[in-house]
Image 1 (tube, rainbow, N blue to C red):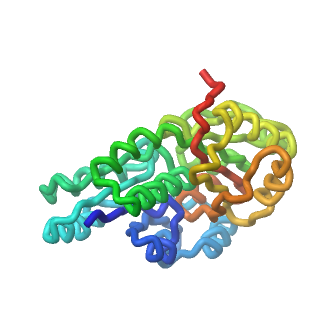
Image 2 (cartoon, rainbow, N blue to C red):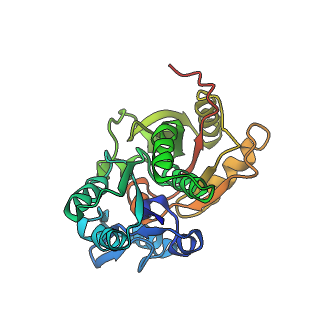
Length: 285
């Protein structure tokens, strides 16, 4: 049997994980009043309420090798294979924890994939993995496909402010601009496993237009594969983007996913984002 494990930054809920037949291990969010497991004892609505009312930014904690070990040992005793797909190793030590756990377990049939992505991008890679498994792919075939196709996944997100990304240290470089004063809306991209500013525009409407241009630089969205739209906190900005884009992009069959507490800690409320496989007709250099 081939088992699939991912982490909670995929924003696949525990209920969805059960329906999909996979395991989602929770990272942790630490507020002053205590430590919470993402999607277990801290649900999304509760988290964003705590975030906006907190006088300090919560911290997040990666998965540990000990969280992987029971699953790895169980697979070893049953002679199962495991595919682990984690968020980018540039953003968390979770990937390294999985590697350490594999070494501790001393079992070769554990295959660990660094998605080089996070949240919506990680989610569509996991869903692709499930489809490949359901079509009868071998573990070697599936992992080889993932290592190739993960580089075709792009994630863009329009954020209300860079404040949370700056404080959380998840931005590889930050342009100096007065976003809140000038109503400038930054657009961030997950690229080569890191988060960086891809563009900026004044006001939501201009930012929506900029985001569509950024999508088009990769040849647009391959709608024959999974693509996912997401939001943090309220859905208002995502709904506004969908309305703006309805005559420009075909988004009617996209997955829609709330973005959970670990990513939300670093992105803040009011984000609308999209993850997609490119069409292979990239205009970028």
